[in-house]
Image (cartoon, rainbow, N blue to C red):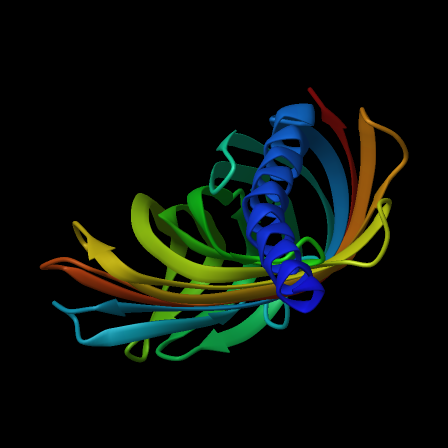
Length: 280
């Protein structure tokens, strides 16, 4: 008799503990997301670029290939400022955004170089003022309190702005003339993004994250394929302030084509970044 009562009491305790544990876990998850629904940060990054552009004139069937860092001495390493943030509007749902601008300029004097079918003896300049925008939605696929996996989907804005100018003696198809030439790339394209965000929390203050994202699609005269990845460490000083530091890789192949000209752009960079953000 005592044995049956003991088994019955044990079963009742087990049944009662299951909803209690679930309610506790849900409450902890809700409290966590309510304690920091919005984060806004600013940071700086040291970036090493590798950029190549090829202009093809369809009417004249000629092309101009530019290695921006090699041929035109555009700064290979640059410091950029980043702005980023996130909004956790539900325990499993969040929005994220980021932005940074590249501002590089080079002036080459007494140049004597051949760019495919175009030879320039004189002066040349190149400017790169490209903007990068990202807006993504994250849906939580897995969360056990220490590790989390989010599925990312959103829009990646690639705002390319290049201007190449050259003046002096210009030789095209064996004919030399004194004058100038200017090639401009200026186009904005919102492209679809998809990826995964992995986060592992070691302590209440320290966590590590890895993000992998793919961007592919076309918009108007532009088509692009982009791969980007990053790994970072995050430290939370207190309820309101945190810091992030890490490494990032970006590789894009862009084609801009109309009836007169085709531009093939290879844009890549590797960088190290650090930023501070505030929780609200």
